[in-house]
Image (cartoon, rainbow over all chains, first blue to last red; front, side, top):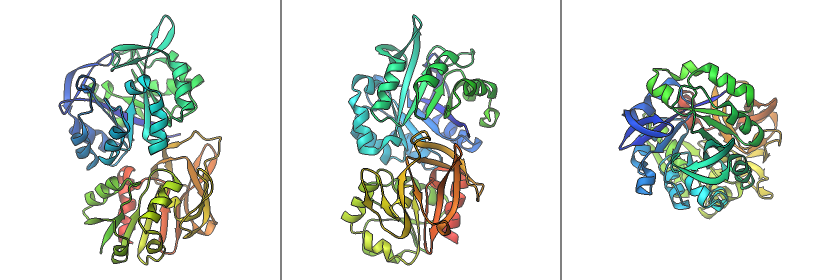
Amino acid sequence: MWMRLIPRLDIKKGHVIKGINLEGLRKVGLGVDLANKYYYQGADEILLMDAVASLYKRNNLFSLVDEICERCFIPITLGGGISSLHDVERTMKSGCDKVSLNTALLAKPELIDDIVAEFGSQVLMISIEAKRIDGVYTCYYNTGRDVSSRRVDQWIEECIDRGAGELSVTSIDYEGMKLGPDLELTKLLNRSSTIPTIYHGGVRSKEHIESLVNIFPKLSGVAIASSLHYDFKEIEDFR
Amino acid sequence: MRIGIIDTKMSNSKSVFNAITFLGYEVHLITVPAELKTFDKVILPGVGSFPAGMKELREMNFIEPIKEFKGDLLGICLGMQLLFELGCEFGSHEGLGIIPGEVNKNPSILLTPNIGWFEGTRSFNRYYFVHSYSATTGKEYVKDTIVVDQIELISHVKKNNFQGVQFHPEKSGKVGLNFLKKFINE
C-alpha cells in the first residue's frame, strides 16, 4: 500500500509557522512557496491549517487556498475555524477537496451527519488532538489548548457511526518533539479505527513510518510538519 | 479546438478548470446545454451521490445533449459513474446509459471510502482515488484497473467517443496533468 505523505502547513498571516506541542511561533516561509515546494517534491496531499482561526473565530485562508489550488494539483485540505455547512461550501468552491474539523464537531457532533449528508463522506477529514491524561487518551481542541470531556477511542467510534470518511489524529505530546511517533496512540488507532486514518506527530524518518505500519497495518497516511520545515528532509526521504 | 467543462452545482469544476488552464489551454465552463455541441473536448466532473448527480443533469436539461454529443467526452469520478446504465447508491437509479454496466458499493472488505494513490495494472500510472462506489462493465470497455487489497476495481473505461476515469487526474500531480493533456490532444 502506497503511504500518503501529507505536509501540514500551519499558517499565520500567509506564513507557515511551527512550534512545539501544537503551539506555533516561528515563521518558516510563505505558505504558497512551501506548498509549491512540497508539491514538486512529490507530496500526496497538502493540509493547510489556519493557526489563528480560533482567535478570529473564522478561517482566514481562502485567498491563499485559491492561489495554492491554481498551482498544486494534488488534494488540498483546509482546516481551522470551520464550523458550518456554509464554511464547508465556501471551502469546496475555492478548489479544496476536503475540510478538516475538530473544535466545531466536539461542540456539535451532529454537524458530522449534516456535512456527510450534504457533501458526502469524502469531504470530511475529522481532526482529533489526542493527549494522554492519567493513562487515558483524551480529545483536545483549539489547537491543543483546551481539554474536552471525550475519550479518543469513544469519540472515534462515534465519528465512524455518524458516517465520517477519514480521521487525522495528532499526538499533542509527540508533535514537534524529537521522540519519534506516539506508538501507544497508534495501538489505540489500530484497535478503534475502521476508516482511512492519518497519523500526525513526531514522524521524522522512514523508519518512524515503518514502526507505525508495524503496529497499524491499515494506516492510510502520515502528516509531517517540523521534519520537512526544519530538518531539510524531503518527501522522498520518507518513501 | 474548444474545450469545455460541464459546470453543475455538484461538480469540482474549479479544480479541473485550474488544471487545464495550467496546461496552457483556454477552457470554458458550460452551463447552457445547447452550447455543448460547439465543443470538441468536454469534461464531466462530479462529486457527491449518483442520484444527486443525475438530478442535477436532468434539471439543467443536460441529459439528451450529452447522449448526442459527437466530440470527445471524459467523465471524472462521479462523472464517470453517471455514464453507466444504473447506479445503486441510495436505491437504484437510472444513469445516462452511454456505457453498458452499473455502479455498486465497493466490496465491504475494503476501507470505505477507498482513498489514496493506486497504480494502473495496464497504464502503470499512479493516480489519486477517493470513492465509495465502483463500476462493473463488459471487458471490451475496460481500459485500466487497479488492485486494492487483492480486489480488482475498474479505473478507466471507454466506449467510442465517451470515456471515464474513477480517479482524479486534476489531483494526481504531473501524471494526472499528462492524462488530461493526452485526452485533449488525442
